[in-house]
Length: 315
Image 1 (cartoon, rainbow, N blue to C red):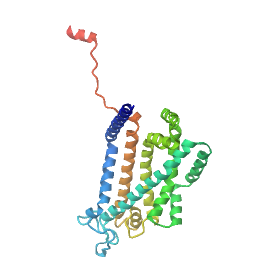
Image 2 (image 1 turned 180 degrees about the vertical axis):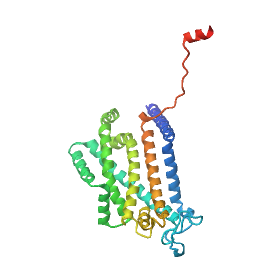
Image 3 (image 1 turned 90 degrees about the vertical axis):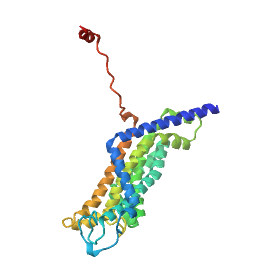
Image 4 (image 1 turned 135 degrees about the vertical axis):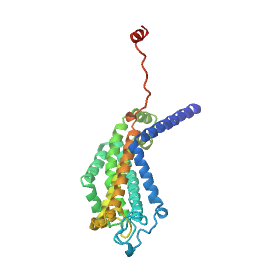
């Protein structure tokens, strides 16, 4: 019996490794997804090692170098206080990416268990949870985040809390729908027949088999959180000055669009590149994690020539 159990586990591990290798190959076959992952990795490396890459302090004021255009000394120019724009873009990316990742963790921690519980239990509990979720979804996401941050005060932890509370109901509803379809599958019935408890079925059987749409949804949450954080900072509800932030730098650059357009183009280009990269990665993961959309490369098979044609050639 122990040998049979070990062999079955080995077969399952080999199948999982094979599926993962096929999914990885499918992901990198998507050129947009591969380009997006490359840009996202480069951006992450840049903001992580910003002290080594940036040549200037992002908050240091130099009034003798105000509004200078891009040059070899200042790659993206300087702002109205003489601060290096390239340094501020790198350090501002730290805030945007850290807030985005924190919102993803918060939404996953709160939304996934709620969606699993609602879809698995059903009945009155499901109805109650979904009505509360619908109540959150009736408010425009950005306005709800502005209201929460305005109530709690402008701080990064309040921004993460507000955006997490906005995104968690969306994730919970998606997980609930996937759980409703997964709980009727054969493997769930088999686990229940073998005596598995509700928690084991939810987190070991159902959650493991619905992780693909959850991962794709988390990339959407990530990109939405980056845009929302920039929007809140643009309104003055994000990181307090003089800390660099893409949204706040955009707000400050409005007055200098004609005199110093690089002040506006640099943070807006960083936001656009970051969001597009995340969306491309999400599209690639969606296709890679769904075997039905896999494109298998097959070599064309040469069909044998008809016998009549061969006879004509001989004659």
